[in-house]
Length: 128
Picture (spheres, rainbow, N blue to C red):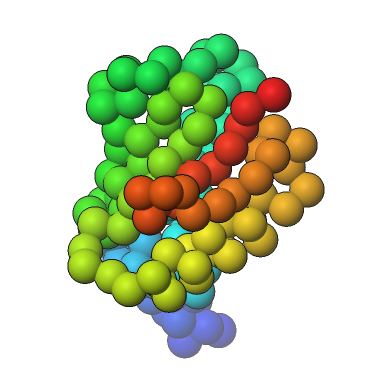
């Protein structure tokens, strides 16, 4: 009985240490890629329904957010949300990102389209 309690306590302490060190975020990102990116874009999508009518055409820089690893830059403009990969990439990586975001927002009535815009980045369209 004492060994079982020791194992349980060891497991609980391990989980606590992993979650406190940020290692848990890395594990989550391996299991569910783009989790942090989705949290950021979801926040902007939600705010366009609850807080802002529009972010305006020139105010996006003020609201710009980056993922912790600085891989993605997310900037709202008007009722569009621009997602840019912050490293040199091929078009295939943007196609993959677009497809991932389409899957993530499938069925979300507030997102009307996800597409690659003329500038080469991905846009999440929340226009009415």
